[in-house]
Length: 314
Image 1 (spheres, one colour):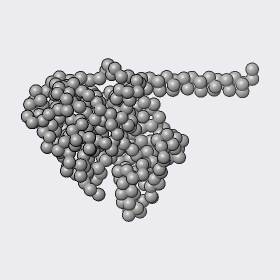
Image 2 (cartoon, rainbow, N blue to C red; image 1 turned 60 degrees about the vertical axis):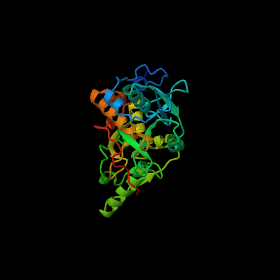
Image 3 (cartoon, rainbow, N blue to C red; image 1 turned 90 degrees about the horizontal axis):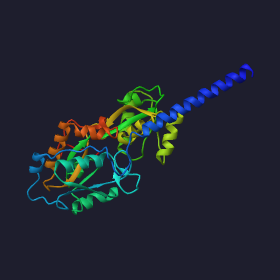
Image 4 (cartoon, rainbow, N blue to C red; image 1 turned 90 degrees about the vertical axis):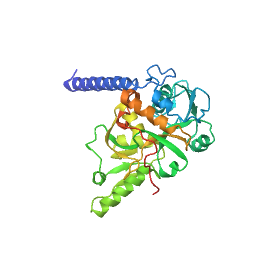
């Protein structure tokens, strides 16, 4: 065998070994997340007497002894269907279970379509909506809110990208950034770009794609520099396969704060109890443990609030 052929064979062996290591690493990363219907690793909590006492005396649950929660099974890690294609699992379901435990109730999850939650909640089909709902001043006119997660959008780049951080408007100057049309992410990018242009900085190139698969290919192939989207979904992808990484976050309500909250009927008398329950879970560590199951600990709030200032009308 010639030296060239020996070197070629050696290189091929190295490539094959690297591919095997990558495959094993990816498989191990994917094993971090439990999508089984049993959810044996789900974090559970004890009753919180103070939270139970805070439930208004005239509040009636949809079903006695049951906390009925509506959620939209749209994407991991927030909520998705388990391997049985019928059980809803995810971080929002884990949080709903913690609240049910704290209130001394059983949990019933009701899968819904996103457009249906306001009418369904108002009409009394469920006690609460826990489905990545952001607090807005307009929504507060009809619903009460208990915050439980930071409303974050995340900037993500390829794992081998030279970009270290994107946290301020000047950080996006001259970059090619993927985002969704008509979203709050697009609004933020356009405003940051406007500020940059006024300062004589390079414009940002915003890229739009019809689906997540196409945008992911664009990012990984180098046709885009970064992706700005809901942090939860992108954080899940980063933890799952290690091909992308976070370089910064921005609150969904920028330049103000707008966090994610439980929605309940206006004046129903349940919101304060849910806030007390959440703060109890924060203090005893169960809250962060539950978020960590889905790699969302960076979205943890320090303290839950009832009806805080929300996203204003722009």
